[in-house]
Length: 328
Image (cartoon, rainbow, N blue to C red; front, side, top):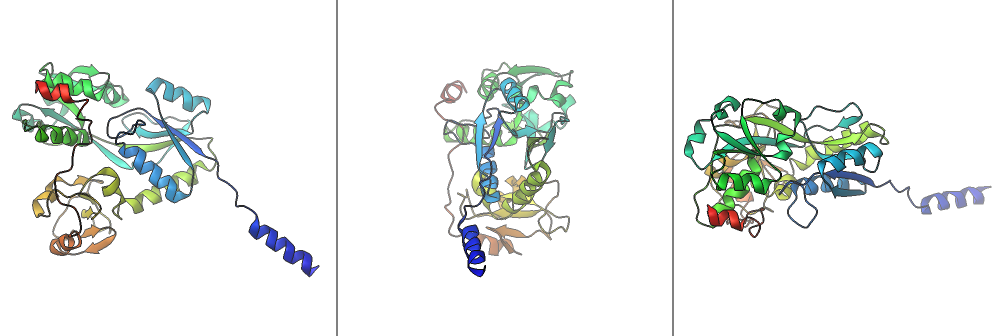
């Protein structure tokens, strides 16, 4: 009897662990955020890393918005990994917390845009916008603006370059990448509005009938929390500095990594940090470098001494945007 029990234990130990079913998620193309052609795709990178840490196999697919919706509805896909919460949440879906903020700014060749602080300030001029944002529930309700809708981000920037639009409303991260292109060509960079005109976020959306949907979303949220603090987000986003309240004292803390190229190791660069939450930095802010907390900026910069210092290239494809740069 003991021999049989021993054999049973051995067989149990040697038995392969149950294999988790592969999740299939989709999203619509958005330069530097979502792509499947080898181009930089920050949301792809963030979600793939999170699922890897969760121990869940994952396949990502990029498709047109109309096809994406039907693929989720038919069960071909388990959900959308780049759901923008400018849209009303659907009753048949479950959503994660926002895992990356989306700040929509107005930009222009004219520095008068720096006086723009609210959507109504755009009313007297034509405004270019990517359909990715224009077709959301929130933007569709704004009727008093002369929107110049465009099928792609490239077309939206081209409308601004050709002076067919005075303003462009788009993502802060896309503006930063476009300005990198302009800077590299010694062209005058675009100006930003005084503050974001629309603040939203990207969420993971799963069908409500996906196995263990609530617990999986909870695990995703917890994994993202860790990634936002240990330097992973800096590396995967290509951002030198992020801010978030990581110790619960109500003040934003600065987060960075030595694995990211830094433009400079100087206090002025902190002004361009991307905020992951709504808190603001103050004298009580700490500095988190690759998961280690420092109380002074001098100690933080010392921890970054191994980082490469210089200007990184834009994540936008220079060849694709060449025509725009020539007309600038």
